[in-house]
Length: 173
Image 1 (cartoon, helix red, strand yellow):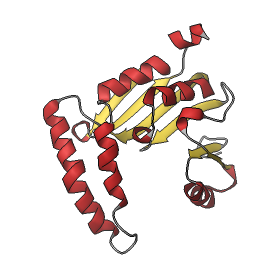
Image 2 (tube, one colour; image 1 turned 90 degrees about the vertical axis):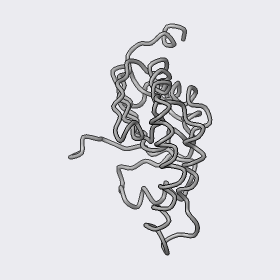
Image 3 (cartoon, rainbow, N blue to C red; image 1 turned 90 degrees about the horizontal axis):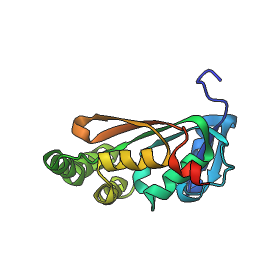
Image 4 (cartoon, one colour; image 1 turned 30 degrees about the vertical axis):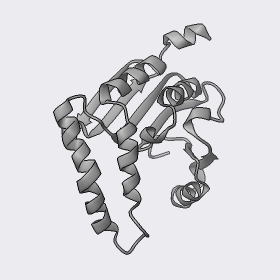
């Protein structure tokens, strides 16, 4: 427990990625085949949720965050690290240009010979449907609780940190 985690649950719809993660993380990693919109977990069973570069891929942002909140006990935490979509039209256009045109070329150069095609092209599609950083912050606060947004690289990289306290949705349950 030198990293502060007792057990690590890994959720992914790909059995191949879960097997790979298990081979790297060992016996404390518990793979769960599934999606964020329908977590196969009891209410309040998690102490924290950490999602890295995957929240933009969910079908329903609001429903996924509601599920994270349901599965996280009060006093728990949520951390999201992902690409961002700046609220400023200028910075959003600049980051959009980088993600659409520069990043795929860099990725192709850096992964040449190691994989077929360019798997990073899918990021362009997910970035286009992504909500702006402030809208994502609002969704997190509505579902999970108080949230802080830290942005880097002109808003193209974001970190959201939220605490799981009682929110209006808890009162209705």
